[in-house]
Length: 90
Image (cartoon, rainbow, N blue to C red; front, side, top):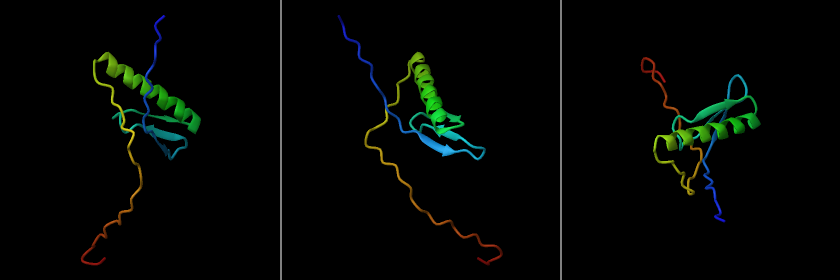
């Protein structure tokens, strides 16, 4: 009997709190793959579903499935906001 193995892909997912509540979720490695959920748990469910659909469309169209590198580093950096001069006064 032939054993079938399934490849598991992992993607970085960004959860941003929405102004009206819940979360907006996006996947940087999959441009345009985004969704939302009223709770964190719903947002996780929705983005998993969105990723599956996104990848199935790529596969149907014969396109390559993007794979995220394992050595990605995500951090925040601080940048001072430039001062705006109004009539020469800061």
